[in-house]
Amino acid sequence: MALQIGSTAPDFTADTTEGQIKFHDWIGDSWAVLFSHPKDFTPVCTTELGYVAKMKPEFDKRNVKVIGLSVDSVEDHNRWAKDIEDTQGVAPNYPMIGDSELKVAKLYGMLPADAGDAAKGRTAADNATVRNVYVIGPDKQIKLMITYPMSTGRNFDEVLRVIDSLQLTAKHKVATPVNWKQGEDCIIVPAVNNDDAKKMFPDGWDEQKPYLRVVKQPAA
Image (cartoon, rainbow, N blue to C red; front, side, top):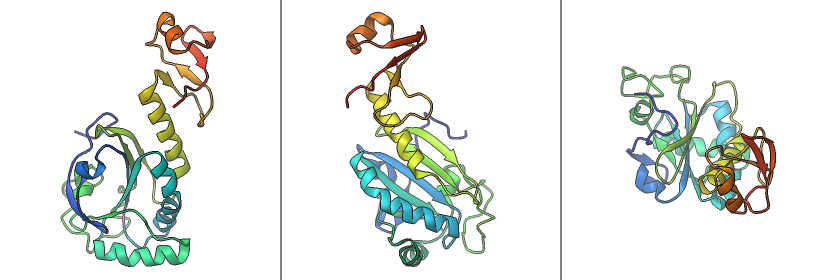
């Protein structure tokens, strides 16, 4: 069955640039971002890995662990890290999963089961579907999935924005409207009736429609 929002993120044991991990144990009580790459030494991914390294303090502030995956070996990842530092000004400061046998890519449905069991000899085009972002909660459920084409660099500012929304809405009975950013007004979820809403939001709200009740963002 294909993974979807609400699915339990498949657990696995793998070697990474920071040692062997068991994925669910590595996540622990944190949130996690797993983002995948079709091949080492590819141009778009090089820029992405460097940008995420620069963003790591923002993820840390939100109790979010970041981990990359590329369909190559840990040894290749370590060599690639030098190129990333040379061109982007910073090397990856988070683990990169080695997936030279394609096990994790297939486990997450990014490659078909008949893709073989070796990265050697495969090109980035062969692995074009390994371009996903997963946001995973402390409950190990998938909260967000985004798939990108190889030609388009990912927007990690958007990933961070979604994490802010996910963490807020996990704590409060609100949803976030279009283009919402941290600190902006939210929407009271329809499942909360007005009597309960008065207790949760004593300062009131703007009822634009019975189902569209706009309220100041609750305090963290």
